[in-house]
Amino acid sequence: MKRCLLWLAVVLVLLLAAAQVLAQPAHERAVTFTFTEIWLDEESTYEEDGVLYADGYLVVEASALSELTLADLPLRGSGQGGILSIESLEMHYLDEEKLAELDPDGEYGFDESCVELSGTFHLDAAAVQQVLGLDPEAVEEQWEEQAEAIVEHWLAAVYDAYYAIGADLAYGDGLYLSEDDGGIVDLTLTGDGAGGAYVELFCVSWGLDALLGRLFESWTNVGYWFYDFYLEGEIREESSDLYFETCVSYLLYEHYYPYPDNYTCWIWEGYSLLPPTEEAAELLGFDDAYLEYVTAYEAIPKAWILREGESIILHIPESWHPKPWWEPYGPRDLAADPDGQASGSNYSSGKVAIKYNWKKNTLQFDGPLNMEQWARRHNLVYWEEAAGLPSGLPYAEIAAGPHSFIKNRHFITGLIVFLYGLVITAIIFGLVSVKRIPRQMDI
Image (cartoon, rainbow, N blue to C red; front, side, top):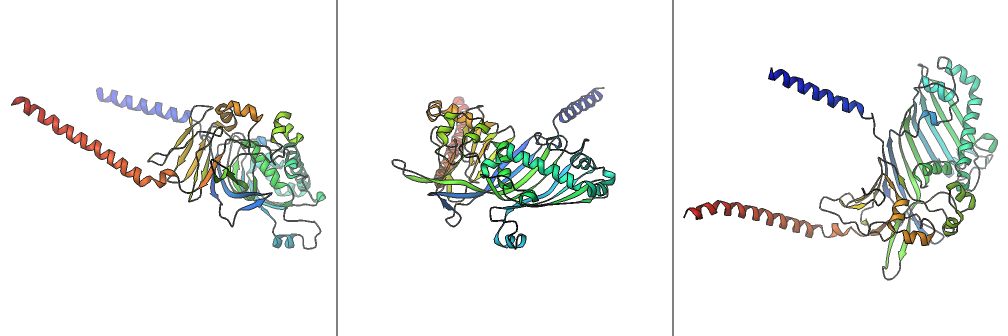
């Protein structure tokens, strides 16, 4: 009887555990913005208007994005349950060889500021019906009849998005995507035999880099100029998964701190792609007082906003290290422990938000973290004096040389070993003394 009750208890526990697993969401939101490389070599840095800049390589791995679904796209049809797979989407600037190939006679007037966008997409039967508005049972036949209307529908959506989010302000010009505007757009469709379809995209235009950067900014609150961009992923009915990697222009800039600090470092901070103009400020919701402050900068300062499950990881180059931050930019110091971790406080939520791993030489920011609120709470007086976000704060300073812990790791390791030895010796001595005490009492 007791054995039966035991088995019944085990079964109940297993059922409860299974119920808890089923109650959890299928995927938890997970997004990592990883700057895998930062190019600080003299050959790879460049100067503009007296400021030295450096680029970096950004990899984004995102899963279970509920804010990007099929319903968020400018659908042409209706239905549900579809899957749009982005097998590859690439963007590159045109070099001289590509310019000669695409526009040998100068008919289009393409130049090195033009970008080439190419991609391959797969739509299952339900997505063919939703995205393209075609009957899955006659997808190729209807494409022949409606291809022009479908292309016009999606081009109109891209144009609307371009101007709605201010990409024209970032680029300083309009979008030239359609053939009427001097661009090249080519779409081909091939049925997959199961009601779905493969779509091949090729286009050449001005302004797509600004559109891509502003879309990223609407997600993260900061803007970057992307080039050599690659994206793959899947957009579903309730969520999406994305993976992309890209080169980032103007990721860091060099700054010299005069006496008494007297050191030079590279600074990573946030900004918008939009210039400090009244139209751009209005689009971002800033008032005149803020605009008066930021006119000293070429772009409007912004700060990263990380949601739950999001993180930023900066891979700092070898022979460089993150410096302690000065107020009001963040914690005064980042002290590493022997396990290679160091942490700072998130002033908006009280959670640990900053981690420095000296073994990997990475600086990590974990969400939820609104860097703007964080900086405002850290030094309200300075914030009020600045009348806005002071140049994209908080930021990270990257200075030459190894981290102080790395320089002193042999001494610190020896000290730790010595302390452990003292503890072990004390324990052994204590155990020996305990054994001797009863004998002395017997005597």
